[in-house]
Length: 68
Image 1 (cartoon, one colour):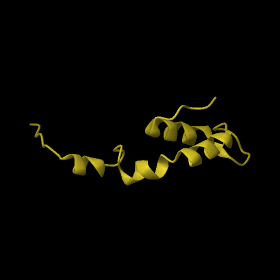
Image 2: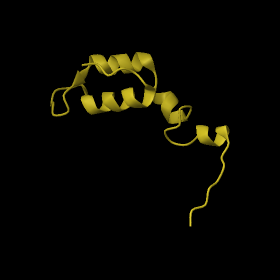
Image 3: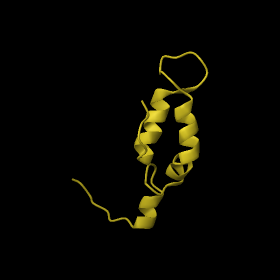
């Protein structure tokens, strides 16, 4: 049996992954994202930098375009 529960927008905002959640607010900083994108390396790269999958995740969460 499935039970449905109605939640308020305020409750939804604190759900992990919610558009207004503290996690999203911390991740969705365009200046920081642009820095990570500029220092992106392939997922298999051993040199210093930000691996592509990290940049791709933040792009998806924040709605930013993924650089090539």
